[in-house]
Amino acid sequence: MSSYDVVVIGAGPAGNICAYLTAKAGLSTLVVEEHEAAGLFVNCTGIIGVEAFDRFNLPTEPILSSLRTVTFYAPSGHSFRYDPGRPLAHVVSRQQFDHALASLAESEGAHFRYGYHARLIRVDSEAVELKDREEDPEPIRAQVAVIATGFGSNLPLQVGLQGPREIVYGAQAEVEMEDLRDVEIYLGRQVAPEAFAWVVPLQERIARVGLVASKEAPRYFQKLLQHPPIWNRLLTRQPKMLLSPVPTQPIECSYTDRVLVVGEAAGQVKTTTQGGIYYGMLCAALAAQTIEIAAKAGDFRAQVLRRYEQAWTRAISQELKTGLSLRQLFARLSDSQIDALVELGTRDDIIGLVKRLAQFDWHRDLIQTSLNLPALQEVVRGGLW
Ligand SMILES: Cc1cc2nc3c(=O)[nH]c(=O)nc-3n(C[C@H](O)[C@H](O)[C@H](O)COP(=O)(O)OP(=O)(O)OC[C@H]3O[C@@H](n4cnc5c(N)ncnc54)[C@H](O)[C@@H]3O)c2cc1C
Image (cartoon, rainbow, N blue to C red; front, top):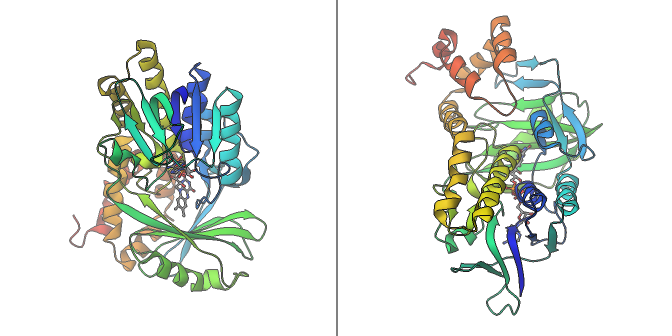
């Protein structure tokens, strides 16, 4: 039987950062990952704000391109180009990024077991135990487990916690395409009702094309490819689409005796864009801090681990709530209202406001200030206010 201070389940960004920090704090740490390496079979655009690179001193080798300018396309076909005058984010290869984070954790002494699918988790008074099957002769035991599996695992249920309740779907493909310059965002009920679609350049002639939708994402994805501004430049005629659920709200409780849930498994995902990498890593760092405190006290009961939930709620829950309200409001707008909103975005005073308040990862100030603008209220009125 192998025994550790910390076992992390899942070598994604959240799990790896948590393992890096607990190993750095001197705790014996094991990461188990169901695939044969970190970052395999990931469906993600890989956009990570520059703040995350600064905050965690992230490796820059996985960066494929940088997000400097964004062109928004209204349903009418009109567009407007936003140039903040500085790079907002980088686009990474997720395979390389997850791999680089795993190497960082390893450099601090974390151990990795690949090809291990944790199926059973059980907590007793002495430890938490993981098995990959009922008759597993060598269960893994640890003082505390961190569930960092992304969306869809039933491990939280096994310890009495709930998974995220509401989801949307992200549909995406990597394509060959001509005339790539800016990140392109497409809005409108025909293209991506309730949300948005994107073209994100990776290299010359290679881009990720995708959308978020609450239902019928594959159908909207096929329509998106045929949207003239995309179709006319598309060189890959039948791209391989990947479809994945993404939670839209955090789980109700993210801790219990000897167990914490982090990252997408806990619904720690931006509610405006469905980006989950940075918030997941931020919350994973808070989980590592709590584990350090619990380890010093030799007490991993829920009442001690509760600090983690208090900390991450303080850090991101207002952002999540404000973003969700915006998403719900946006979902009810007609195409002509969205046209009017994009038109507003071309006004100098609005551009000034956006430049002053917009932060890639923190949207609350901009949302709250914008929603109080008479011009914007005028656009969305029509029974919504
Ligand atoms: C189309 C699309 C585009 C996206 N684009 C972006 C973007 O540009 N920027 C952004 O920030 N976010 C984006 N996201 C969201 C982002 O991909 C996730 O929020 C992020 O990967 C979550 O990180 P995580 O570490 O919590 O989980 P994951 O990255 O899902 O990692 C979980 C790991 O756990 C492993 N695992 C799962 N179950 C088990 C088990 N039982 N035993 C062992 N191992 C297990 C998995 O194999 C995986 O390696 C996108 C999502 C979609 C669908």
